[in-house]
Amino acid sequence: MAMAYAALSTINEQADRRANAAATGCANCAARDLSVCGAMPSGDMSRVASIVSHRRADAGETLLSEGDKAMHFLNIVDVTVKVYKLLPDGRRQITGFLYPGDLLGLAFNDTYTSTVEALTPVKYCLFPRRQFERVVDEFRPMEKQLLARASNELVAAQEQMVMLGRKTAQEKIASFLMALLQRARRVNKASDSVVLTMTRSDIADYLGLTTETVSRGFTRLKTEGWIELCAGGKVRIRDTEALAELAAGADC
Amino acid sequence: MAMAYAALSTINEQADRRANAAATGCANCAARDLSVCGAMPSGDMSRVASIVSHRRADAGETLLSEGDKAMHFLNIVDVTVKVYKLLPDGRRQITGFLYPGDLLGLAFNDTYTSTVEALTPVKYCLFPRRQFERVVDEFRPMEKQLLARASNELVAAQEQMVMLGRKTAQEKIASFLMALLQRARRVNKASDSVVLTMTRSDIADYLGLTTETVSRGFTRLKTEGWIELCAGGKVRIRDTEALAELAAGADC
DNA sequence: CGACGGTTTGAGTCCGGTCAATTGTCGTGG
DNA sequence: CCACGACAATTGACCGGACTCAAACCGTCG
Image (cartoon, rainbow over all chains, first blue to last red; front, side):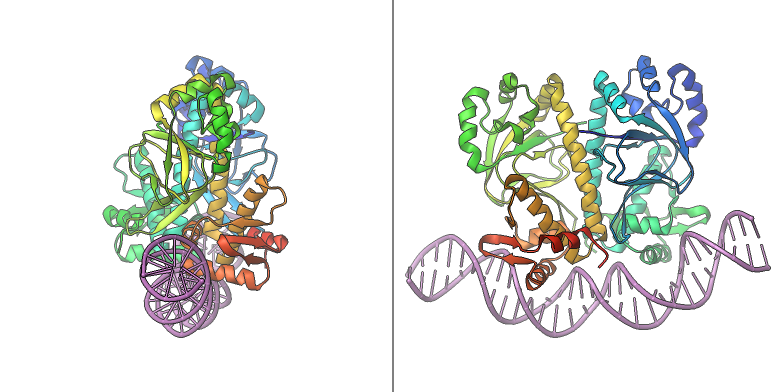
């Protein structure tokens, strides 16, 4: 197995990370619970630091391209990226949006099997594949951690298949919003709103729809009084119950 | 991470497996390259044998149910099973068909997240989760093997998402046939036909279509002269080129 | 202010779903 | 060996949800 890897974290955590950098040697990865380094024994962080390189990319920039030789493993440190695959005629399927702490590379082989593009300015850690694998060999807990993450991603992927294959447009949109809300609540317990950092077109390509259908879906949820569309891409969920039920695909 | 696990192999290999059973202590898993045991040091096969139990199920029988507590890891030894998830109102999405040697359990957590049902009479190995994890702890290569498999499954899952979200009915069917053909060719190099062990309804639930659409799709491919529908669910591919191009989603 | 990209809204079409009837296949038992 | 029943597969007629094409709207930034 050949892999290439990466991880993400948030801009407002940069201060903390810098503070830890001196101690750990890795500014970006210092947010231990957010990155693959979570499994590293703290005294050995410098081992990771020795192979990592820090990068940044602007919104719209491509980090990796499908088909390129997989030379690295990434740790996304900073806000959001989208991962997608293309069909020859340009049809696009976004397989996932990655957030701070997410790993990039578990699903790759010798060549990258997807393209990764920044949605917002993004910071990330880059690990040369060979060296990363050597580190993984040295620290057994990291391997366990990677397997656990891969396992979780597989469960999520299957959930995604149900959504793509068997849910209606309206249910897809509700599912998408609920997923974002749950993520928001993992950070801020009582949150009742989410911020859409991606365009309607991105959402459409994620849900297997068109921009128009997504837009209509949102307005319909709005007119039903279940959500509220605010400025800056913010969406307030007003009736979580109803939305959750729709997302689950309850029988009418 | 909590997991439950399993693996499959073919009936016509039973003789070999029995022959090896004496040496290894595990009749079903003895086909080493087909199972999770592929990563076991040969002298230590008895370690696996000590925790495995062998089971069989008839066609249509359920091996695992979504939501049940994940107590085991399975190794499918014998022909085909389908893995699916259900929506509350009964809509079904088949997330994959598993063949001999495939592992079952990588995508599970504390509870099974999918239901697994036998398509044909099936033999499989059952590993109690806790004990299996202990064995994995003892034999490092097994962990590597599991991670590699999980990685491959993730790549496949993303491919599946593209298919579900962005391909037309006709393209989906072509993709399905090409995938089966490639699998057949991994066994029999020059094979130009595949056997459909599953019903049209299963295929439909795998491709996110209805039985009628699948049926129409097959007949259309037949009338175009690209495939031939024989008895016993056998399908002969007459124009691999054309089918492959359609499956890839070439721009008309 | 005007230009540009993204979003919303509208009108019309079509692919795939639904409903229903027919045909085919296979196993069982007379 | 054939008749029968059960179920899978096919075919046909029709419908509707999501797509397409097109225009209007809006927010942001020079």
